[in-house]
Image (cartoon, rainbow, N blue to C red; front, side):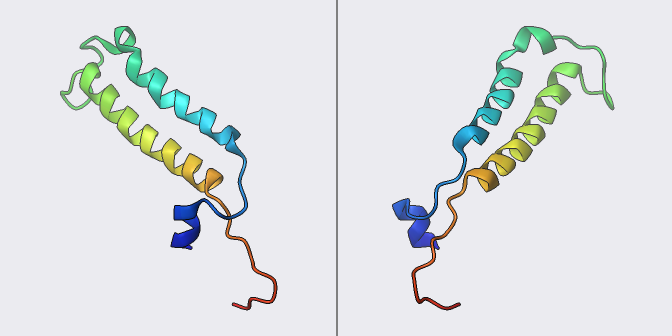
Length: 81
């Protein structure tokens, strides 16, 4: 399985899922939107907790995209588990 990942062998998956990665990018570069202090969350200004929220959201989106675009292993004829 590691060899398939390294060599790119395997059945390709739908690459349209990669478009989801634009969402975290838009969230990170839209600084004028979140460049403010209010509302505070547990004493943290909006600027800080909004960025931290995007770290978590980005990790979740990246995990989904990875699982949906990872190549499926190909079975060789006559190979048994």
